[in-house]
Structure formats: C-alpha cells, structure tokens
Image 1 (cartoon, rainbow, N blue to C red):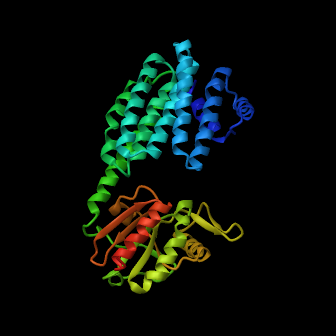
Image 2 (cartoon, rainbow, N blue to C red):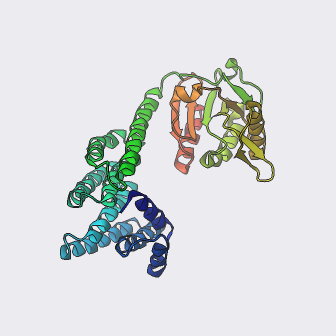
Length: 370
C-alpha cells in the first residue's frame, strides 16, 4: 500500500461514521481495496466507539474495547499467521492502544506500555518487510510516544529516540511510498528533537533573569512601551499571530487579566510579527494578501485588536524576531510570565483550560493573592 494511500485511509478513518454500512460506503469512496477495507472498516468502528466512551469518561470501558479488538485480531492471526489483513489490523490497533495509554495512564506506566507495543510493532515489520502501511505504524508509534510525553516528562520522551532513529535507518528508501515515508519521519524526528531542546531551555529560564523585554519593533493598539514602563511590573508576554485560532481563543482571558489586574501591576503585551494580512471588514477577520507593506500590517493589527476588544498593547517584532529568538518560541500561542524583579516565572504553550488555569494561578501568586 503506497504511503500516499496510507494518508488517505487515515483521513477517511477520522471522518467516517460508526455504522458498518456507513464505513463500508466511505471506504469505497476513497477506493480502498477489499483487503484494505477489511483493515480500516473495523478499525474505524473501534476508533469511533473508543472516542465515544472517552467522551463519556468511561476510561476503563475504552481500554476493554481495545483489548477486545486485540483478542479478535489475535484469533484471526492464529488462523492465518501469514495473512496481511490481521497483521495490518494489529499494527493499527496497537497504535490506538498506545494513544489510549498515553492519554489515560500515568507517564511511567504509559511509557512502559509504549515500549512493549513498539516491540510488537517491530516484530510485525520483520514479518512483512516490504509493507509501508505496517512500517508506518512502527515509525508513527515513536512519534506518538515522544509527542505525548514531551511536555510532561521530556526525560522519558527522550528514551524513544534511539529506537526511532534505528527504525528510520532500517527502512528502504526505494520503491513506492518508501522515500516519502522516510522523508516524513526524518522531518518529524528533527522536529521532536528541537522540541525537547526547547523545553529544556524553557526550564532553564525559570527563576532566572528574563533574557529580553519588549522594546524593538513597531507598536499597535496603544503607545510604545518605554523600558521604564515595565520596571516593578508583572509582565505577561503573549506570543501569537492573526492566523492562529488557539491564540484567539486566549483573548478573553488575556483581556480579563489586563482589566482585572492592570491596576495592581500586570502588563500584558502581545508579541507578534507582520505576516502580510489585511483586515476584511465583511468577513471580520484577517486574510493573507500579497503586496502588504509593514504599515498595512500594523493597521491590520489595530483593526484586529479593536474587533476582538483587546485592551493591551501589541509589539510587531522586526526582522529576526528578537523576543521569539530569546525565548526560543516554537509554537503559538506561548505565554511567558515575568515577575516584578524581572525573573521568568512561567512559560506555557497552548491556550487550553489547563494552560490558562496555570497562567491565571501564577498571575495571582505574583501579584500577592496567595
């Protein structure tokens, strides 16, 4: 199965319904063969059922559903040890078991489960050495484990790099789909290594002096901040962009914090760049536009901020993005909190409930609420 068809099949799995007849019809629409349907239809059904159980917070039932699927597959493999369909079903279902463990178990327990699953995936690759679909599950399993553990336990995440490297190096580079598969995972491997380095750097900043404060660049949605304006203040740097939906999701809390705590010494600063977007009044959003000048982009930021009711100033960084570089920002939104003494106290990536709660609690502590 060529790698591009693996991607198409996975996209189909994410979009099809639970019902068997609906899944089969969807499979035919993406032109899966009968063998491929025999892999992906039951996999899609199980995946949908597990998602539904997790949505109802039935965690143990979700685990039982995956284990039930694995028992059924192992019975099929016992009857047909060299059959591709049960082997491919096993490869995909093991990946689901890994994702479920990483989502619902403690990091140490999930990491051990991942290692056992990857060992089984390696056995499948040895049994079907020319199959890109089965090989993709082994490689993707490493990425899933590292990505899931990266923020909470980078040391455990790092343990998966040697076997991922070995698996990539062992893959063929010629033949349908192999070059694309290997190139994709080479890029992912580097990205995850960069991610671990970034997290370690962020942790090294906590408790130390802020490497850089806002200054150089153009200001929107308010007057320029001078160096003295931040002395003795609690500073929140919000790294964001006009095209970033999760960044926009954080706006209500950012504006609330500035309004509620601004009089007590909090200064929120949005940190972004000029990306060639103009404000569309009819659509009420910024859209990419060729030929935008920096002045045009700054006017877009003003109108964007007005539309979203932002009550804090925005710094559009110059070329080189010195603040982004100083804090090694790799994902947005990212938040940096600096205390009154100029020390970094928190770095959070994301705008989910857990991240926003952590930021809000730290603001309270730095302002003396606890």
